Length: 320
Image 1 (cartoon, one colour):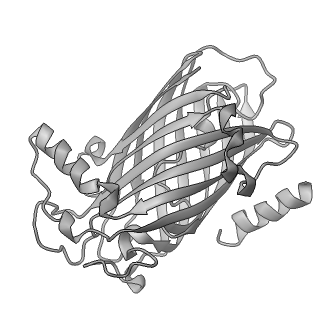
Image 2 (tube, rainbow, N blue to C red; image 1 turned 45 degrees about the horizontal axis):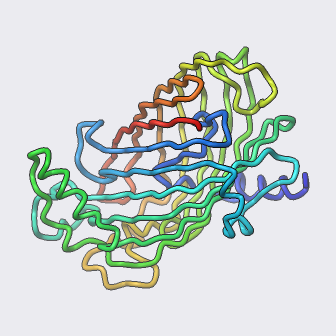
């Protein structure tokens, strides 16, 4: 087993193996101390006073032993000496250019794009090794079938904002099939007041093919998610900071689907920024059964004629 883990760490950490998903619900600082919980994750660039690039995303996340019966688990990583959680989520993400209100293609800016996916996930934890290992498979659709236009237009109509008119030029329908594996190692924990972890993620598939290396630091009053045996606090409040360096192979939200090459407008491969930096930070409050989070994120430009992007989000969850 250790040889298998060493092999995984070698490839994930050192062979340019990134952090492509926008909604990362598997990182340790978002852990709920239960094998049964529900969480709603919502991102919007409105929180950063913006309305472009990654404009909105949401996820409905379920963790339960019930999903041990999911046949997809057979291709996910489940180390025998790890404590395992099983989950299923529905995720939706949407992207727009800066001048989304114009009906014409915005050459030099990002194309309109939306994707919807079902995500099967397995989360493993080793108390002895201070390791977390997660893997997931996303299956879904990018394109008009993901109803990104209907969602954004509906929100703008309800809030009295300018109606976006460029969705007719969005990335065309294509299959989303993505496999993700991530590993996280705790390096430091001082009295459950400050902790530091290193992490890496690898995405391979038709939506995102990329890799990342980073870290996260949490500070406050928290339970150690790498130790299931210690006495648990019923109330937690802490902040986190998470810098991430990304290596980008393919991004269908910019370059179009892998098989359907009929999109009216895409970003060419030689214009993609192959190295990006993302920074996430936020505050989390736990009670014994409830979870609340406010998060902010920024990322350097993802294509040569683009610019930096910012967004924020909220997460609300409960155990059962």
